[in-house]
Length: 364
Ligand SMILES: Nc1ncnc2c1ncn2[C@@H]1O[C@H](COP(=O)(O)OP(=O)(O)OP(=O)(O)O)[C@@H](O)[C@H]1O
Ligand SMILES: [Mg+2]
Image (cartoon, rainbow, N blue to C red):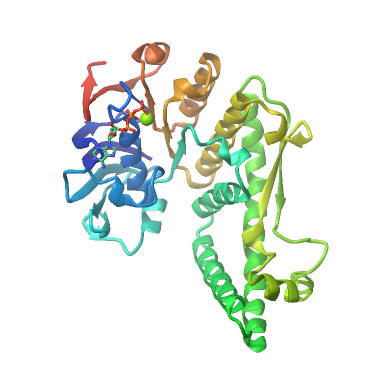
């Protein structure tokens, strides 16, 4: 999967940007504040319907404009089909996503059309942040390889929300609580099964990605399902009943899941250096891309913000080599053109110089 053309209108300081993208390597360099991250943010919005920098897309619309528009020509493999996808967001909050001229019901459809991975200065949070980050990591993977997952996940979120709303009421209708509990338990089990299956499938890809990088030890991923799994969920919910009512929330379930990430048997976040943590994040996301490729026959797209600031020279080279091996299209930003000279010599690419929101393609 790759984008051959990208049109960006009124995203932050990018007023009108139209570029032909390389199916493999795309490099965007330029001074601080020139618009490099906004360029990646535009692609991210195209694939996710939201920004990775701000919850409210109105902030992302250029200050002088009423709306932002991003559209792109998408090539899918192995079918070889082409699609036009686009999003539009107005400064008063309207949102529209389109695929081949038709409006989409929700941003979820964008996500399945344009599977993308972002790695930026905040990505170390996958290891050092809370469990939500790791659940999002695993759910990205399951969503892209298991078609039934979206439906189960939505039903689970809805049921959990209803159970929690009930628990927040002063006087609890006991029968209704039993009803929501009986609905929630099997959904927790199904989600757990999907996630465990996914992590099992990911393990091989992870060892391959890890062995491509110097300086990481033996990495293992252990899934914690969100409750004490020596008990059945019925036992957990009946044991938790009073506690759930007192604390007004559902204390155990698939929404409390986590992945314990260990290196050489020890928690990764506790003893790796920041650089090694970042490298492990790359390995985890590259492993997901490898797994996705195996399952779908297609590649996913990578957005790597300020790569030279994130990794040293040698590890940067290893990441690029791995991305090339997986056949991924990638967009890399950096301040200094010189940081990309070795890459430019090694692989076919497109290079763009970003200046005050204007992207100029350099002749290869
Ligand atoms: N809504 C907006 N309208 C217009 N300009 C904006 C808006 N939001 C942010 N900007 C400006 O857009 C510019 C581009 O920001 P961006 O983060 O993309 O730069 P960058 O090239 O990634 O810089 P750095 O190298 O510092 O990371 C900045 O100068 C910022 O002040
Ligand atoms: Mg930036």
